[in-house]
Image: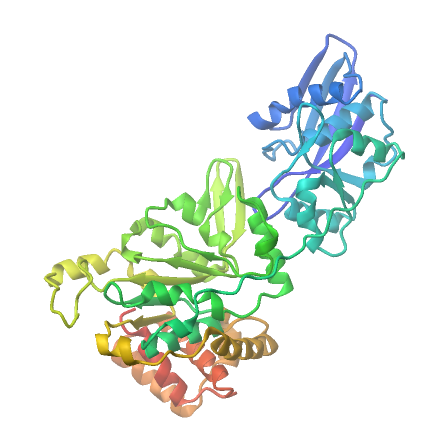
Length: 497
């Protein structure tokens, strides 16, 4: 046999399109040619494959070898095609049986001695292999990720010889070891540590229950970052599908996916010096950014105006659509970005505007310029804004501790469960006809909302966000109908946005 065909997978955003690896052996001067739009990493696989085949005890064919990676217009990157190329060459030269090649998909980087090294995107490839109905063979270090999926046949291989033994029918590859979820570490940051700030605590509970975006504004040292750090402790439990989607995105990142991340909502807090590619995603070979790594979790932007304005404006589309589309000359990839935005900022450049000490010396023009670092359209896309004022020393010394995170989380879980049962998503995601059906207030509530629109000159987007927040407030109160009281509590969260 001089031609062998093996299936593998590329990575394109959150998808894993099939790549057909075709190896053809012909007479002529010995050569090893790779075609099909391979990048440098894939081209280097020729030397890794040559050494691995020889050191595994096989004979590297002394013929003209052509390996085609189809489709030719799909860019191929990384060393994940090493294993498929090696198996295709061995099958084309008749050194291993080709009977089972149509049943399997192969991905793995080869060491020079034939051992298999881990690859990115194992969970994404496993999802694609499940749809195709094939056995997926991965390096043992990567295969464990896929054990969270049901209905997919994944096998773990330590080296090239083990894969050849399976294809020859001498021994079956074992399934990977189960990914044992580590017990979730108890949140050390508890809401009970926060004294006072009842308005901010209430806003945090509403934001957690409806997955609303939240902006905290206040002088330095008033507890903005402290409150943000405690949001993770009151978020609702992640569902199975949400956990799989989040794990799939993390499997594409350089850090990969680990057991302790399973069903734990991400909390990403990038520095304000982060580039647009780091925050949104990108690169010559597009990788997910912080907005995608925060999928079904929280993206916390501290010192919001210190971020580059153009970078912040890139958040506008994912906040509305829940995904990021990155276009390059030869490809377009899409990453999910359904995150909850949490941000904090000072009221002015020095931070002490309105502080009882009277320390602020900022002029109105300086304050306006500082706040203008965040564009109006981005402000408009934030659901809630709340002031976090400075507290007197007496309040910090004598105020009793508030409710614990566990008590608040119980209410959040109950309200979130109502949302899932009613509309299948969080209130923050309600759109169009679904929003009208689920969040229309009674007559008194409609009248109050109309007055607020006229008085504060609110946009249509702002009105819809008031309805979503009011819907969450009603759910926390276990009330089916939104009334004027819920609207009245939701309206002040639009002040200053």
